[in-house]
Length: 75
Image 1 (spheres, rainbow, N blue to C red):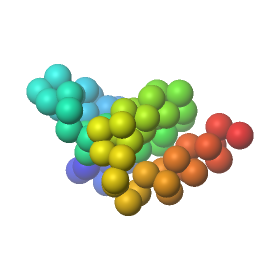
Image 2 (tube, rainbow, N blue to C red):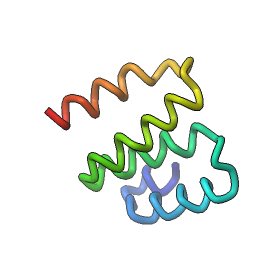
Image 3 (cartoon, helix red, strand yellow):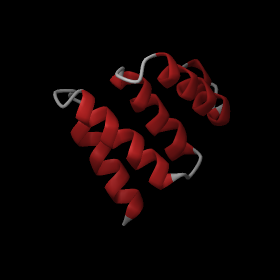
Image 4 (tube, rainbow, N blue to C red):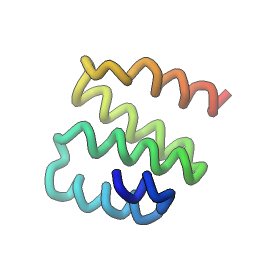
């Protein structure tokens, strides 16, 4: 999250990928990957990360807002 706050999105992606290698079942890392990929303009990768995050934690209150955001960017 620190890299995202600092707008160091490529570093954030690398950090998230390392986190996924450590624990691929942690939904928050996919949410952060979604945000970093979206900030880089990688819409398809962002959507993939969001889809995994939603699958892992379907009760997350931010899911609807994040899905709306990615759908707005796609369309």
